[in-house]
Length: 258
Image (cartoon, rainbow, N blue to C red; front, side, top):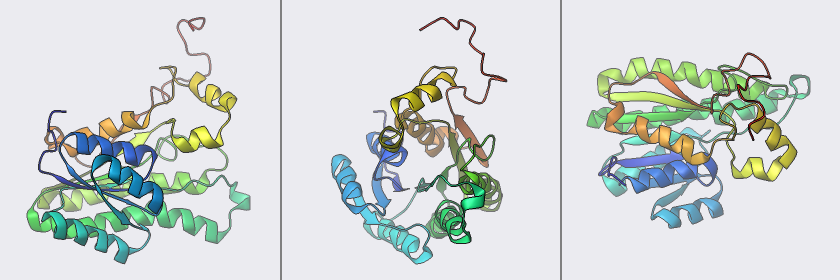
């Protein structure tokens, strides 16, 4: 712990588990006062208790709910310095099987929710002349994709466009806007819904030879939230173990290395 976020107030949305929880933990370790927001009340409250954070039940697709969460942060702590919008859903559906309602649900949480988070956070951050707005994007959509992830890919590519637009519009208020693009991360959901063989196949496609951990992504968010990133805005950090680098499947210099 080095106190890199000492005195800062952070709202982390989608932080009951996985990347969001790891980010909330890292922020708390570095001195931030944290509010965990999620629709999963039981898991969210448990995560909040672990780090001495507040919990708020939040559906980020609803503007009024986001505004209430922001108001709570300001009421309780007097300011809001950092917002991380990590909430996202990714049902596996081929495009030909995706209804308009399914499409709207994914885009509603992932992309509309990101706009709502930025819109709500802007109010106190503009007033105080300081802020860090951060988004969980993905390598899926901006760089690569796979069958069954059309709506998810569209939402994450859209988030990258939002990052650039918001960074430009908010710069004059002392607010930076950035994101992190995770590759394959070993979250609870992956462990629960994917077989060991499937996970091994993902590992084999990553030059560093392992899936990332939620803390790997959280460390990137910590950097972007800190004063060390004061001159960085409108961009993303790829956290993928080199997954995007190979041109083909046979990429290892020492393929027999265990």
